[in-house]
Image 1: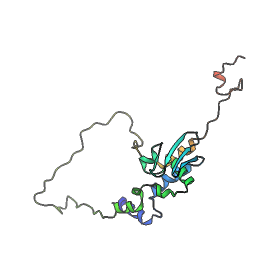
Image 2: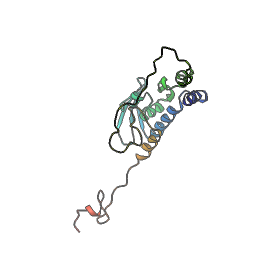
Image 3: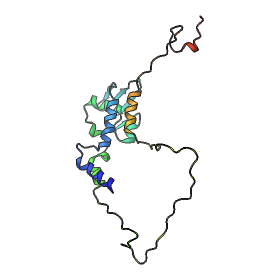
Image 4: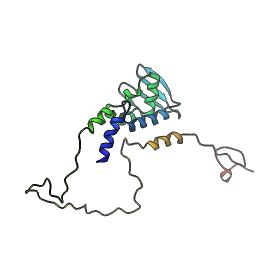
Length: 193
């Protein structure tokens, strides 16, 4: 019951057009879009080169990107955000309407009342049959239980976006202490002494 009213309060307190969770995702993608180079193909199509040098084709009219994140989540990916900044297009217009506060408010506008207690007999007809519902007859799978569930397609944890942003830093090259060459260490050095 409480979560229903809490989500209803989010729509009352919300500022802007997007829900707070989607705003966090867009902000994470915005942070990741720094350093990307967007080149204009035509009026609303761009070619975006990311930090690793990979190329992505972004169409802002069809709301698509070759990384397929934009089409799947209906939230602009980091490549689309880079292209939108170059085109001077508002990011809120690229996010699907299903993530708007109005849509969230319409989903939680009706009230849900608690069910009557079965012991008091309220709201029970004479013809009602009481069924005893038992849990399914299954065995636990072997092994240790997972600490977190497996995310389905399109689900993103906010802290994962921040981790991805920081993990993209280039690694330090290995330098051999014997020959001062790169790409290997002293134990695997094949240079004669």
